[in-house]
Amino acid sequence: MFSKAHIIVSSNVTGTIEEMCLSVLSQIEVKNIIKISFFSKPKDNQEYLQNINTLKGAVKDFYTESTPLISYIAQESYTGRLIAEVTYLSEDSVAIEHHRNFIVLKKGDCTELLTGCIIPDDMSKSTYEQACNIFKGIEKLLQSNGMEASDIYRQWNYIQGITILNDGSQNYQEFNDARSIFYNKSNWSNGYPAATGIGADAGGVMVEINAVKNFDNNKPIDNPLQIAAHNYSQNVLDGKTIEEVGCKTTPKFERARLLGDTIFISGTAAIKGEQSINSHSATEQTAETMEIMDKLVSKENIPTDNNGSHYTLLRIYVKQKEDIEAVKDFMDIHYPAPAKHYLIADVCRPELLVEIEGIAQI
Image (cartoon, rainbow, N blue to C red; front, top):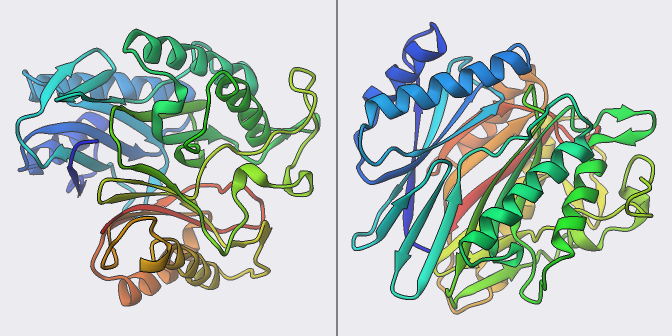
């Protein structure tokens, strides 16, 4: 896993998606950019696909050589404009292989693979069918690069209508079942990836992965305040069992992963044990979430010798737009240092109002 850094850039104009994209790109001053994740709210799936093509075209025209990967996430930003999370290499002497929708980084024996947004062939199909289609493509991609699913260390899963029930079948549970089928093909002796499962306004199912091979210091991190998600009981899994799996399967991810001196923090909400905390206040849920995350990345909980850690990037998902100001005020007071951005997105349980993911450095 190679050293990376991130900046957050917001369009300083309001206009077409292309105009806002060019505004973002003109503000980026860092070099060695490998990925740009864009966030905005399209009105429907057709506009989502149009926006992806526009963003890819604009970025390709702007960076005529070494075009960065592009992801487009259908979530409204706090500003209401297009926002970008820019990932760039902060170390030299890394060989970069650019492909259509993925990048391979190599140095010595270590190989890292990163993708842009991976979308299904048909967004009109069920969440389960879309997810199976995506994972089939991911399996082929990994195999063609000498990897397997258990080499994934970070995964993002965006699910349109994440908590919606269709004839008793929940979209998030359908996704988890499809993921479990895919993951069952690999040996996960070193734990699952860090991951986020979050709602999106359009786009059906969309997945991004980071995978690494031949990197020794790669460890899962558990949280003593929470039951591991992959050990949840059936009591907290929603929706009905689908025929293909025979039971409701658990979300397969770790609370975080440590790679070198970087901690990749999974999407975290106000859940202790396996139960959601009983609060209808977004601010209170934010405080509880950060308490849980602080414990996760605390000196005594990091599985290596260390002098503590600090957050470098936080992505804050808030379910209700009217709660963002209060959540932002809390975060600005208590966590002023990290780069942060705020997005309006549904969370994986109906009672949860906030979810936070991030990166910490030890």
